[in-house]
Length: 376
Image 1 (cartoon, rainbow, N blue to C red):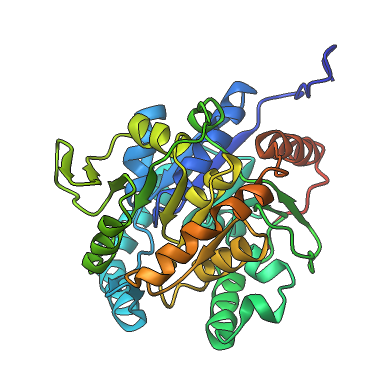
Image 2 (cartoon, rainbow, N blue to C red):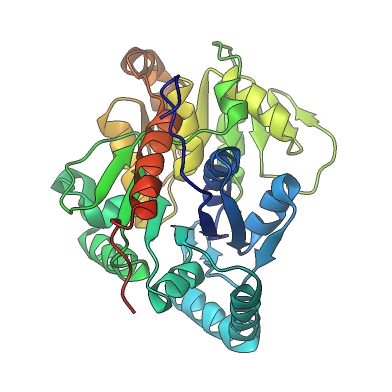
């Protein structure tokens, strides 16, 4: 330990870090973890897929691109058949050759001591093949490694079981699982630690205040009914994602369609009255941290999003629906905002510190040779 109580590592650990590119939440979270590891003096090689590559390259430059899993959406739901076929085609056409090439390039230039995976399979398989310790850091493992009440799994029992089986098979047998979450179900498996959401610096530094506008974030298609409903509320709505190609703000009455800007989006979130968005974990966790009530619109067939939304409602932090175009749903949510604000008022967290504490402990155990290793 250093004089101020911080962990001092005996040597630099060489870490292979994998980030799945489906959605941006994994990359946003990984940026925080990667920066901590670099600040501690460890040496990293980063492998990522999809949009995560470009995002991480902006901050760290050298990121290896690999082919990752992706989902196909139609009419606000996951199309399982097309998702499977699209991934099979991509893997056959370019995924395997690229990943194998990256794999052998890695062997020649970087010999990691340990692997960290944010739901990314190729780095996990590398750890298994070389019997290295592997740490999982993500929000998805909560589905498999915790107990959930029937009110959470609900009528989606089949979807829940399929999702749990998929997640269980994605990264089995890791040395330890660190799971980010704003809700705290009972842990049912060993080698599992729950931490509060890991937040990017821009959120931690945001000037949270109560405004009058709604922040609306929707990237799917077919939400014309929502626009009509929002227009009739008379409340200013700052809308992102619906008009993806605009470069300037477009104003139609109380609706303000905005081009994406990270700084602008965060300020609109921090100053909002409430949020209407999907069921993704990252934005939901940021809204909860900033004490913003949220109406969640999870994708049908995406159980993880449905689960997030149900816990949000259960804790009194917001509400959820599939039928976002129904005026009664939006107006009902607006009526609930004061009660949600009361529930959120007592929420406090320091997920970044929780993560740093457990991660440094795990790295010390790895250096000491006592952290469980993956098996081939």
